[in-house]
Length: 138
Picture 1 (tube, one colour):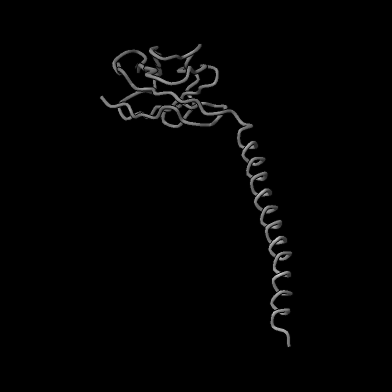
Picture 2 (picture 1 turned 120 degrees about the horizontal axis):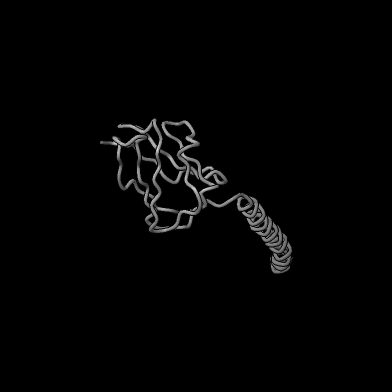
């Protein structure tokens, strides 16, 4: 038996096997990268959530109707048409934000249902995200 010839044959067979394994690995990695890229683009089709810092600056619960003042402290400019105001979970059509709402501006919301313990939310309708959520406390 020729030992030298046996080892030479087995070394030659390893090269094609490694080549096939590398080609399969490259194909799997490329498929994963392309799939992630394509699926990632699908998530960006919807409207992006704006970033805005809103705060409850003041409140006048004795006014008729009661009022609260919301201040835009930073972030993106908001379009009032894209915002809805909910008071204790119900949409308040008469307490909406008109026009644009940009940094440094104040908007006064007035509604007869505003009182101590009332939860006010401002929702960005296209993205469905809540921009402001606070309970009024006297």
